[in-house]
Image: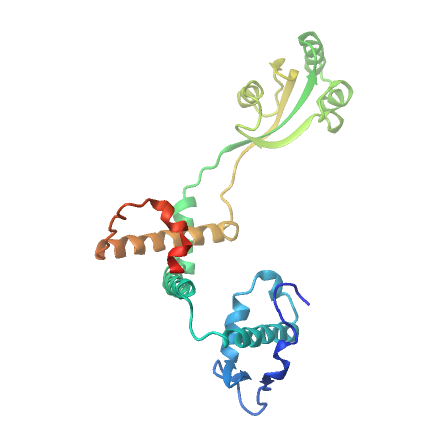
Length: 282
């Protein structure tokens, strides 16, 4: 039994009669699935509750989840029937929740109208149609402790020695066993002295000894390329979220301009008054 989804597990047994959905009629949101002392619980109540549950509950088997939700609603009815009305605090909470749900409906309507395949494609084209990309480099290096060591290795390379083999033999860096390969990287990912040496190289060439905080390097530029624009599928959600946020903000701005909004100053109190819950208990 999932924790937190139900409470008072046996309380409802004497007070409710669950009604099976009629096989010969198609149920709708008004179909009654339980009665508690005459108060009806409908299929709509169950569906609304299920739609608001956290993701972990959505993974439950349907029959298990249905029974638990119905049990929860029954128990809520039993406890709720003990009250004639909401107290001031809960009445205001209900007002706030109603306001929030109405706002959510407006947001959903805006999203449905504005976040379309056409809008997403247009946003993608505007952002990436003239995408030029950034430089990326594929380089290898040999790292040693002294400049003299680096110069000696450079001399070997100039005489035709294999860079990868010398890296495996001589390099003290972690890439040594892999022939000194650093793979692909962009600007800003290496220390400045190393990056400057890479940027200055032609494809297939090897630098003179370069000193960084890690020691002395010989750098070989294996290849160079431009980054490619991402596929639409990769950035679709991000673009949709941007369109959604922009559309909602535009609507808020429009409504704000059209509305008459007043904010009377609080006399004799500061914002800390919002913590005085006793004002709702008087």
